Image (cartoon, rainbow, N blue to C red):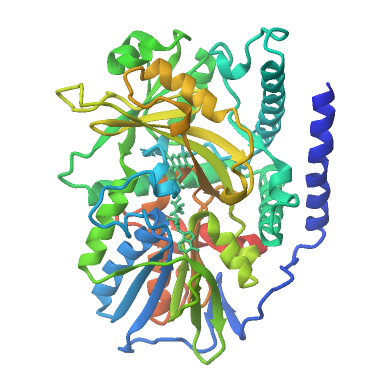
Amino acid sequence: MKEGVAFLLTHLPICMIYLFMSQQPNKQFPFSFQFPQWRRSGSLQVANTNITSHGDTSTLRVGIIGGGIAGVSVAHALVGKFLRDKRKCDIVVIEGDPYACSNSFNKPVTNQWKAATARNANSMVPAAAMHVFSEKSALWNVLRDTLVEFYELKREQLQSLWPSSTQKITRSEQFAIAPPYFALHLWKCIGSTASSAERWSFITFMKHYLRASLWRNDAHERGKQLVALAAANRNLFLQYSQNSTTFSRGFLSLHRTADSAKQALDEIHEFGESAEMISWERTIQLEPRLGRLPIQPLFTVHRTNDIIANCGAFVKSLVNKCEKTGVLFRNATVKGVIALDGPKPKYRVTFEDGSSDDFDVVVLAAGIRNALLAAGMGLGDYVPIYPLRGYSFTLNFESPVNEEKKIHMNKPFSVDSIYCSSISPTSTRMAGFGEFVGYPEKAGDVPSLGPKILTRYSQVLFPDATNATIAKILPCFRPMSPDDMPLAGEIRPGLFVHGGHGTLGWTLGLATGECVAQAMADYINGGQDTPAMYFEFPDGSKIQRSILSPNRFLN
Ligand SMILES: Cc1cc2nc3c(=O)[nH]c(=O)nc-3n(C[C@H](O)[C@H](O)[C@H](O)COP(=O)(O)OP(=O)(O)OC[C@H]3O[C@@H](n4cnc5c(N)ncnc54)[C@H](O)[C@@H]3O)c2cc1C
């Protein structure tokens, strides 16, 4: 009871801040930068002076900030566009992490690279893409899970102080109850340890998140758009991966009740994806490790057309392809972007080491840092992305056991929202949890049940792993968009954003990378008489540009 009251008291300020913000829709950062005069045209914005027009042959400099799936997918898609138009163009991908695949060329991708691209669950899941986070029920789940976690952590504290007086085991130690997934540590997001820019990025995110989840009644429609994007993404992936054997199809989604499994199956069919209900015996046949779970039987939905492939390794293969076509990769951390005054849009990218570089076109593809980079330009309202912490656990095995497939798992699966998939002949990835704890540098001391729960599941499912200890579990931050739709498009002439894929960066990133490249090509080629309404994919499907445009947050 006391904890409940404490929880309400600590979380009351967010409601007040939301009310305050919703009264001031045009609230800008105190250090906002004024841009030269731009003219709006349709949903896109066009500069007074086009930087190029048809027939212009000068070399154009494009800087892409971020070498994760978001940045590299744009670079790769853009190369194709420019080759067709025979336009001279220098593309530079700027990546700050020394372990990123673009900075460690001759080494395999490892989870020393902190990006979500390197630590995710490697599941391309169109049949689960309809589960938007920005809907009413998710909001209540966040609040409920936060309360549960708070209570459990307090009990654990008591247990460690007086082990004999509180014998009851906590939720992080038992399988009978599904563990909490979300957590909201509000004080870390807006409290004294957060910088002013970090605080505003949370408030801006929350303002749009609450609007999308409480006021807009279009979660179902957004789910449909996400599934359609994910299907286009899968087709692009298959097109790029022709003749490759490095991916598998089929995903086992485990449910605790028959009703929940049936509901999931109906939903998948409603959204046009394929799935079937299978018996527990069949489930164990497909993935014998599941027979070790102490909670049995579970109810299985087999999503037959979802794909598992190593996201980091795939991004590395795109980097290699890009390199061959002349794309440059630079290892440097971007400090800020400044719009330069002049007749043509131009941007100065400044680096932590004090140097700088000028570009005609810049793409913000820096994952969770996009919001802060945009805010530094006074454009924070266009990019309300915020980090959501998850955990990533790469389990190693001594040698391949399954001689036929050379992997330690037959089928990827999810149980209690924990994803498990094989990423190489000698390793498997477990991943899960969603915690609002602010930005990574200041979140190290935020307590969490996540690592303990992951360790417990790993020790049951993978007792043969050589490193199933809590110390090996790594945090990993997803760039969340407040309405779940990624941001892919133009902010200002010459300035683009690609990000906010949340839990679905691998499921959507190739398709939205293609969208950003199309928007950039239109801009570079001098625009069209009538701005295009849709982004079109090679499989013939399309999506309305305004749905992904960062301008949507200004309405
Ligand atoms: C635990 C977990 C599991 C997940 N599982 C899945 C899954 O199974 N399927 C799925 O579809 N999605 C999954 N995701 C989501 C997916 O991983 C992300 O949406 C996606 O990786 C985001 O890609 P990104 O390129 O935008 O960001 P990132 O992968 O974070 O890459 C951003 C890059 O930008 C660089 N950067 C940042 N700031 C700067 C700067 N100032 N200067 C230079 N470089 C900079 C960073 O170093 C980084 O390399 C998961 C995420 C997590 C956390």
